[in-house]
Length: 583
Image 1: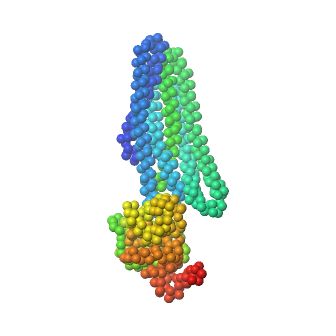
Image 2: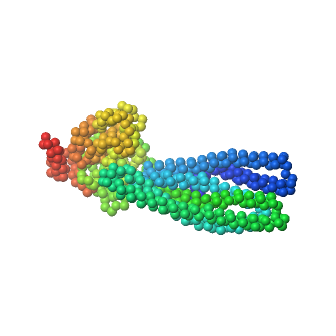
Image 3: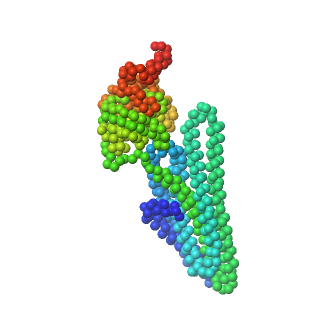
């Protein structure tokens, strides 16, 4: 019953629906007592030779009325109880989704996407069944079983009733034992399904890589192995589940045997009539469902309990990035003052950034260069509060980043990451993602700034072309420029391009940068790039190496310094010269 206690908050919320559903279920259970009683009365009339057509018609009308009442009442309780269970699934699904959107990147490093999807599908289905079929089974088995036993004891024979209930304690012991085993096995089966779900998603997303390297057979074999594991773990669940019905059937058979043996004896002794014995055995038939339902109840509860544990564990994981009390509820603007002493990723032993100090006035452009893994992207992620827990402070418009509400901070930042993500929607919808109400003219203006407008016009349906999942139908450069257009449509106070021009040629890069300089006057831009031509016009350039600033200045001052920047710039210029045949 633990899972019902854990879901108590929901039952309180939907108490009217559940109370009315339970009351109706009890009425149905009472109405079910009518047919066996009527059958026994008619049998006694037949035995006594007193049955008339009129009397038979009266009792048949009673049966029809009881049947019609049960029909309508069963329809209503299903709406009340099963309808509420669907609400629970909706509430938990929304809670999970909202929780996912609030979690920081470290959460997604710990939890696989396929596993999260399994929680939001399979586990929620098991919980929904607990709040629907579980409640039904609990109430129906107790009310039907209780009313039937009372009817048997008080209207027929309490002695025969006690005799028939002798095997029941054994059933309670065995079903409880099966339930404990089922809980453990179902938990493992759900974990195996999560792993298979994750494997499937990963393989589909990486199908191009798999086919390129000719690893189809190896991937199929890995899928088969994980699929077999899911099957084996579910077979274990099925084996335990299959113990319920035979066990209950044996106990019911024993009860039937006892009722026939002792019932016949009581009829011969004159303690019961033949009609009462028929009614008693018919009532005993009604007890089969409560007994089976009782076993099924353990099954449902243990499945629901295992799934609710998994979902609750996810929901209990706290957000790492939260709004501070009395946070500023407006978008920041102004100068950037970055005074970082040290930052270490959660769980890491060595700091990734140390002694990063610089100031950037509003409207200026910052260029960041450095080797792969130097810490450039981490520096930017701290600016948008993807991570915290650093020593020092970062000011935006004379206030620390933590002083602003997280939503307001991110409203002011247009971030184009290295890993471009496009939705399976039209080009226009992808660009307008940051502003769904944007007009066609605004979307096209942003596309022109990102130098992608002409390319889009060449697509099959222009701006209405569906790009496919993750932009599969586009080139790398096209995806980058659509991502840039999406950020520009925000007209953000601070635009961050994290190596977002790597897939475009030098001519296109220069066209995009020229558009930014002309159209973002008075607004801050930060660009990281391995290609130094993308940042040579910046007001301030930082060279990062092993998490520290090794060089800083303008392009001219860095070229005069004979450091890494000059060496790399000349090297890239030479490469470009060679690519163009010395021209």
